[in-house]
Image (cartoon, rainbow, N blue to C red):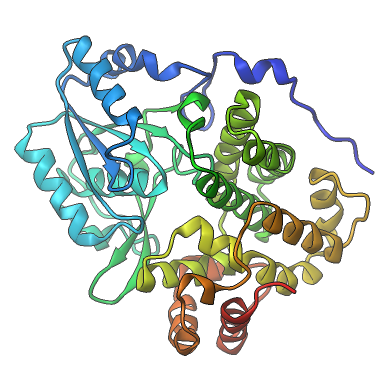
Length: 398
């Protein structure tokens, strides 16, 4: 078996700064430095963006209080759904302009971070939201200065959205999610503070944790040469495989929370390479039924892995090693994934989260248009995607 790189656990409880792929401030308690970071990046009146589910959580008031104590005024915008919508982005832009803000601090899960990015792309640029769609030609801007200075603070270990410039937003007219992107919205800083995840409920620890696992697996399976992303994906797999169950069983374990937060971040770096059919299907189900993204991914994951893994035999031993498996086979990997899902109480079918079978054709048709379908390691026809959706709805695992 290939040897695995091991992170010394003592570092998980220390403050460390990294500069790749963006400036990252890691360590328990790093949120306390937010006023210094704000001044460093010349933010004097930020719009704090969070999601509807996080607005009453202690970290939001704590963030605002730290800024206020440093005589930095701020305003909270919390109108972001679990699956951010175009109308919510417009409302955020109105709040930003009305408050004469000069920066954005996004705090919360992936929806808050994505919503904040989309607000930043459109609020001063004069460019329509959908002109930033991933596959369209990059919009012509008068100046990159139109993008607000942007700080991200993830409070879940799952999304990986804190270092990259893409955002998934629902088109309420078409009932579809689209990937928006512009390098001008890369965050100036990501703060990875594992203390912020200590009070995460067990279900969100599970859902977001398996979301990170999905990111790492799908990104690593994307075809093509990208050793930086592949290395990040494998290191993420090592960390998540080691720490997810520990964080689930022992939520106050700061090493487990730190390991998961770093693993999630690395998986987010990895998926700049692309994703696959788990996300294609999940995006469209989330757009129609407003399901929690990580939970939806988790249910679909083993179904798509059974479809993909036999076609990437050259990568099986590296995945097996990263997950510390004795048997280097696609069956063993799927079995381990299913064991993890059962351990953290993931439902066995989409029907258990109210996704009806009648949607399978419609979801498959939309999923074929998703950007992640193009980077799936196995070419899929619409009949394949429809079948994967059907299995996920009825019974995703034995």
